Image (cartoon, rainbow, N blue to C red; front, side, top):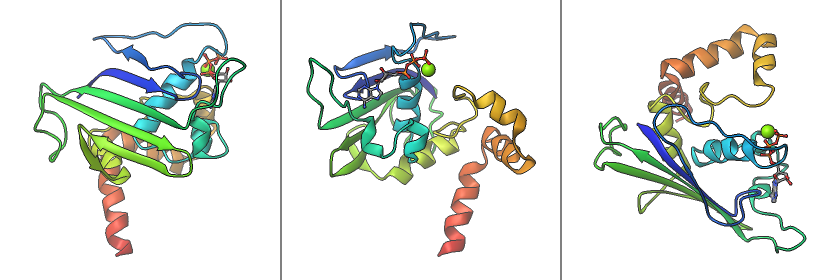
Length: 183
Ligand code: ATP
Ligand code: MG
């Protein structure tokens, strides 16, 4: 599965709809401090089902909604849509019928988050599983936060093992086993 486009609307500093086209090969995002580079990476993690506000550098999940600026009022919702080129049909079973997949997450104040795959309403878990099975996702080792390398060097073996499991694509299996044990 290849990510081809990220669209942000009302997400953090991206108040107007903004498209980030992800071309083949390496994409670099450069800009002055505070221009929104880290917000882009957070949007990617968020649409894949990240549920910890701290991972979004916020106190609550609604903090991702554009909070207003001197000349613009705050928004009532934030939306991120991730387009995936699935031409090679590498998406996990159940999501593998189309050439293009679009995952959308929207959070509305006082309502919470809602997810869609293409036009179909799905649960957060469905989106998290889709990405866990594809060895990516909100906790993917492919997404490296600012300061994360130093954390990794100082982390305990158990935490490092989790990162290796994620990279090996078996974390989805662990999550299912955990859920089965709870039943
Ligand atoms: P650096 O180079 O310092 O790492 P950066 O390009 O990564 O900077 P970000 O941290 O992505 O910048 O963006 C920070 C900006 O996003 C700040 O100006 C902050 O005010 C703005 N911001 C964060 N959350 C919101 C929000 N909910 N509403 C409006 N603006 C927001
Ligand atoms: Mg940054």
